[in-house]
Image (cartoon, rainbow, N blue to C red; front, top):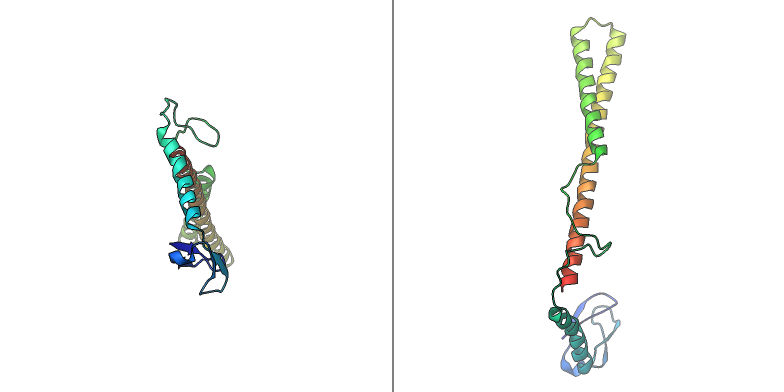
Length: 163
């Protein structure tokens, strides 16, 4: 049989001669209580009984429900958050500004002082585009994680209710 040390979380193998006794963990020295054989049998019976009861129950014709709010469980397809879409539009507009500023600087006859300003505007627009696309992707990943976590959690609750 195996027991776990509460001091260091080690899995310890113990023989029948140690049933019902307290021994020390060889790794950390903490006291480990080994259950008696009748305690083991009782805990196994307790673990099996709920399973037998759930198997003997007759299935009902109720729709599958969410265990949290008892509403019928419907999984809507994933939709991107609107804020992610807004940041993507901002990134695209920033790229358009950068391209137009660069074209204006190269093709137009612009004095040197204004040329430097346009280069700074171009660099700022490119930096803004990179940041906007990064925020958009981050929001997308957060939303997907939340969506699939909730979906998986609900499915696990349904499985546990069946068993």
